[in-house]
Amino acid sequence: MTSEPEVYFGSTISGVTSRFANMSEKLDKILELLDLSTIKKRDKVAVKMHLGFNDGYQTVPVFFVRRVVEAVKKQGAFPFVCDNPTAVYNAAERGYTQETCGCPIIPVAGVHDGYVQKKKVDIEGVKSLYAAGALLDADVLVNLTHSKGHGSCGYGGAFKNIALGGYSGPTRWQTIHGVVQRDKYFDETKMTKDHLEKLRTACPRKAPAWNDSTGKASLEFYECDQCHGGKQLCIEADGGVTGWTIQEGNFDSFQELMAAAAKIILDSFDESKIFHLNFLLDITPFCDCMGMAMPAVIDDIGIVGSRDIVAVDTASLDLISKQGLNESVLKKIPERYMRVNPNLRAKLHPFQLIHGPYKDPYKVTQFGEVRGMGSSKYRLIEVLSARDTADIEPPKHQYESGPSFF
Ligand code: SF4
Image 1 (tube, helix red, strand yellow):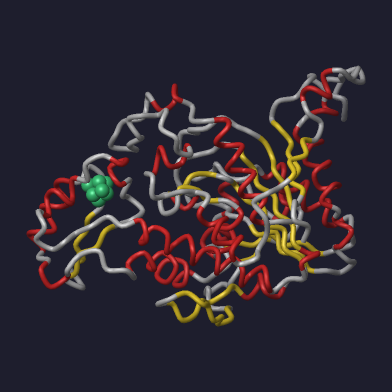
Image 2 (image 1 turned 120 degrees about the horizontal axis):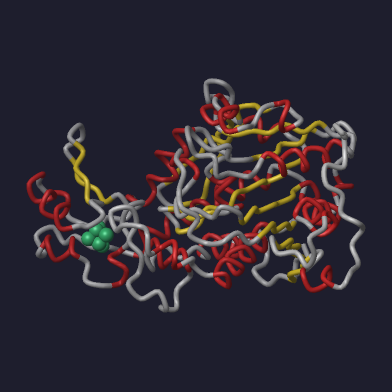
């Protein structure tokens, strides 16, 4: 891998109202520059997506999925879209079918979510992860990602699409999400249900939780926005009784395990057969797992593609940072739904302004870079930019160009 990987970018902004400069053409150009010729005839190509849940339709538009699938087919290869079994089972409700995507859609770890391979992982306190078999069976990986916010780590992008999405349900929910509980942040022997209730009442996010079946307390890290760097009301309510703390390290453990989990998936492919595409459209504050429509808190930006996972997510985060939050949308969102940093000018990434300073969205890319997965120093190449296309005389625009019903 070169020290400065190329990252191709197609903006939603075009220089001229003509099809030659629009998003579909930009995607085609990005695919051309990514050079799909390393995909060989008869290769089985996993197009890993998050197909959303229930009413969560703000995922990668099927229009683009079909275009990527067609580009793969042109190489003589056999693509298939894959995701967890639930998302696959009801994908048609959100417009994803074999007919619309142009290829089969299969559950990434089998219909019972048990077609997996046990993989060792070098993270303290975690012995193994169960990687999705259909993904590991493939010859080629197209990591097709909807970039959006995420409650656990600030951002869900290329890393998360394979780090969580590349594993069975128990690995995702219990092992990877559960790693945040590894480092102790209060004295369990001094915690009672009543005391926990005091902490929960004090917390505007209701993040401290009590589990009746285990009789144990925990912090729901997904919900905690760390009081946005202000007075942490749960600690005040604890009053030193259990030594309750909000530690950055707990949040970081999730990001470190995500990087390690993504590496296991990527290492199962030849380096020349990995492609990453991030769609920075409908950038919602929370993950596609939420299964509901959400406000787009950052305006549409475009499509980002690279062969380097660190570069593609770093570039996507940089573009999101440059774009900034859509404050007119934020103003309409009540605190119960989402609390943002009271100082929107604070030197934090937009996703930290939503999810709190400890959920630094770059962390996963930094852990990935340390593990040799790619480079955060990239070369951004914009395709069919507004500036370039504004100077080109477009072909005469045709409305309803065919088939003609007149
Ligand atoms: S830091 Fe704030 S948001 Fe987090 S648990 Fe404590 S009170 Fe709740």
